Length: 502
Image: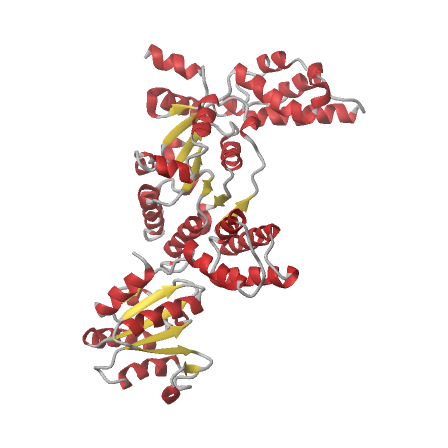
């Protein structure tokens, strides 16, 4: 439901106390005023701690530096008069026993009066004793249509004539920013050039990176890796290539739904994170990385608020890739965590969104220990597919060596016996192969010469792969994948033969 429709419903239903966590005071207050005017022309009173009530000459300055007195104005207005009271930054006073008691008293009183108290705050912070009387509303970031109107308004003061594609790119790049940030960055472009130019899209993208960094929840990751940088994993790469155009308007007209996401399960160092980056590059979509640990905060309700904020930002930036690395470590042992159920609530919010989201946010989650994941995460509907990425086969190890050596020594690649290298490195993961080459380069550099095949083999002999040090855990993981619970990312995997024989 749109914000305006939901707010109208709450006003008409006489919800007394409404809490709106948002940074966009100006925009949300404008929406409230417009809706209040449509609902019987209700008066709107706006208060802040420094200036008290504003906008109404009879009450100007009332409640200045006195948050309790600000609530007393509600009772001074005639019981039959419709009104909306907007209290800015009021979350700072909710722990005061007098404020809390007064709000609960007003909640009872206003059930029979056409009045609503709206608390505006940059963040969600609700004390336990007010959770039953406060109704939380989410105020979404600007839609594409709202951004388009604002850009057109800004262009009216210039002689700008943007082409259709540039205009569409500009609108899309602005998605995920607040209206104030959009105005600020476009005003900067107009002041610099006297108009908005195609290259100013980069200014908007930099502002978007700044916004994402300030959330301290999501990171904007530049994705330069390509599908060709992944050695092996042919089944996974084929799956990704087939869905490369699934976010286009042509796909919508065909009737295709947006792809939902992938869960990549496998042994450490086998290319799960590399795959996430390559997907973003191949599909030309922004890559956001979520550190689930950042969702959790000390205050009651703040972790859930951060989860909703993460979802809101990701959906506003859609289409995009949301990468969640090592998700098994974030939600392992849900029932045993002594955090008053916060982890369970965050997990519930997250998986509900995974199942019900309609926005084009493609989630790529990686996990090393599938046994640590709650069963709900693996249910069909959360992800389009679960792929198992095992240790590379000899053919894949050859491809991995070719990828790295083509990057490091493209001019004399023929000097390396790649077939022998692939044969002599059984049980090596992609990350261990890369480390082997780095060690070989150190050997050659220390002797003032180029590194050779023999140097690589010497380096490999000094590395003990994870497949040997964590043999039991890897064996369990391979048995889980071989039992048919996930698609195999590699063609001609040894696990294929195990499945066929069982």
